[in-house]
Structures are given as structure tokens and as C-alpha cells.
Image (cartoon, rainbow, N blue to C red; front, side, top):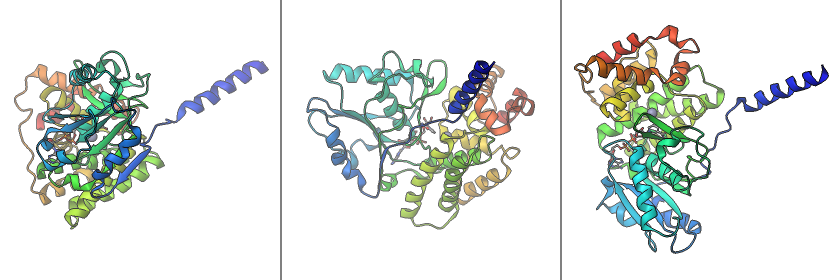
Length: 375
Ligand code: NAD
Ligand code: ZN
């Protein structure tokens, strides 16, 4: 009897021990205008030898631009320019890993991703797959990575996704759009240089920035919220209001949005996103619509779920004269619609965060379809 009690007690303790996520944070970060020029110094101690290169994966917007000249290219380092026109794919990650393995006898000293969420996620995934066997599609999910990634550095050039702090690398695979979520995904080093944001086109600035705003709303209004998430979410929410509704100088707006993205990413680490993200995944999967725009297209119709957030969002759209594209889903066939609804409906954790454990009683597939039809 006593033994049984002890065993029960032990298993209760074990459950308590595993109850809270023990997630990694970025261990090193530099913030400041012009800090990109410190990259050489940061990488130097991480160079294993002159045959173990650094591989820079860079958004091809920067090809031929001044930034290219500032990349601290040493020994046999390689710079690979990559288009961010499409979201990152598992096949693309696997092809990059194969190329790097073919080009060098030595394992690289590390991978540096320079760009928006697309390049940041690609670089994370490549760093993982350089150290793990098989295809990146086998690691889409939670905690499937068994070996530490190569040293990897993230340098955002557009702000909002929070990909610079998160423990996921979102990839479009043959069967699903899903992140490689693991303790090894998070960057070892991040460099935040607000100067790099100066060239972002206005609409893209808005859409990616709204990704951050929507992270905050979904996290703060979610049932998973705790004080840890709330403290980051509230800060990011305030920063977004200053950036999109205040009268900041360009410098200040860039700096604040960069930090909003960071805090927004930290906020969802310990909670979850919600309805807009679940449905945006459907748009992205079927129609290839980019994450930031997809979130905005959905969010405008979510007044029922997030009344204050949606009202603020509309004010922000007006302030920046953003007109969202219309009739995106008007001509989809019923079977295409079924696919999109199925992708959105399968995001259990997001719906549960948004609507609680009984979410299936509060939103039906028909309800989701009706929202899509308005987009
Ligand atoms: P992006 O990387 O897709 O880039 C959008 C556009 O902006 C591209 O045309 C790119 O070339 C351009 N661009 C980027 N920086 C620029 C600059 N400084 N000057 C001029 N043009 C510039 O944009 P994003 O919105 O940051 O990323 C979207 C991706 O992030 C999606 O693939 C999404 O799945 C992913 N994501 C990841 C996470 C995560 O936690 N890992 C979170 C949210 C979104
Ligand atoms: Zn997002």
C-alpha cells in the first residue's frame, strides 16, 4: 500500500516536472545601427579552421547591393543568394544541404541567414540538416531532431515574424506546411541592425509588421496565456501601436519594430497563435499566399473573435493606405475549399488556444468556409 502511494506520488511529481515547457532562448544577441560590421569579429572564434567555411544564405534582394560587399568573406566562405519570392520548402533545404556537402570536404563552421522569415527559416533548417540524416520533411513536427545543429547566426532584414527568436523553422513540405520545432532550431547568435530595414517596400513592411501585431493579439487573447507570454505580448503590442499609429521618426520606427518582432516571438513561444494563423496556413498551402499578407487577409474578417484587435488593424490599414486584395477565394472550387478548410481545421492547438478546449463546439468547418468565402 505504501509502495503504491509512493509510486503514485512519484508519477504525480513526474507529471508536474514535465508540465512546463523548458524552451531555449537565443543565447547571444547584438543590437545596434551598423552592428552588421561586427559580424567578422563575432564569427572569428567560431571558425574551426581555414577549410571549414561559413555559408551565408542571403536574400537575393541584396545581390549587387552594398551589403554584399560588407559580408565578412574569408578563406573559402560561400555566399548563396536565394529568392524569398516563395516560402521555404523541404526540397529546397535538402538541395542546399547536398550542394554544401558536395562543395566542401569539411563540415562548415556555421550557417548565417540574412533576410526575412523566409531566409531565417531556411538557414535554421539547413543548419539542422547539415548535422542530421535524411530529408528535412522527416523532421517537420515537434522534437524530432536528435543531433545539435551547426552553429547558426540569424540576421533579420525585415521585422515582424519573430523567426529570429523562435524554436521553429516553418517549411512547406510535400504533405504539409509545418515547422521543424526543436531545441536545436533556435539561433546561437542573432544580430539586430535596424539599418538593414531601410530598403523594405512599404506594403511588405506593413504585412510583415502586422504578423507581429497579430501574434500579440492572438497570444494575449488566447486561453494558453500566462504571465510570461503576457509580459512580452503586451510590450510588443504597445510597440506595434507606436510604430503603426504613432508619429515616430523613421529611425525610431525601425528600431521599435525590430524589438516588437522579438518580443512578439517570445510571447508566442510560451503560448500559441490563433484563428488568423490557422486560416492563413490554409491560404498559404493552397494558394502560396505569403504569411504576412495571408494573416491580414484573414484577420480583417475576425471581428467576432478579436473585436478590439480587428478595429485597431483597420485603423492601421487606413493610416497607411493599405488596400488588401479582394476576391482571393471567390472562384475556388468546392474541393479546393475543402483542402483549405481541412488544413486550417487540423491546427488543433491554435484553435484550442483561441477558443478553449471545446473549440469544436464553437467553430465548424462550415464556419471556416464562410470566412474564407469573404476573402
Ligand atoms: P520574407 O522573408 O518572405 O520576405 C518578404 C519580401 O521582402 C521578399 O520579397 C524579400 O526579398 C523582401 N525583403 C526582405 N528584407 C528586405 C529588405 N531589407 N529590403 C528590401 N526587401 C526586403 O518576409 P517575412 O514576412 O519576414 O517572412 C515570411 C516567412 O516567415 C514565411 O515563410 C513564414 O512561414 C515565416 N515565419 C516564420 C516564423 C517562425 O517563427 N519561424 C514565424 C512567422 C513566419
Ligand atoms: Zn506569424
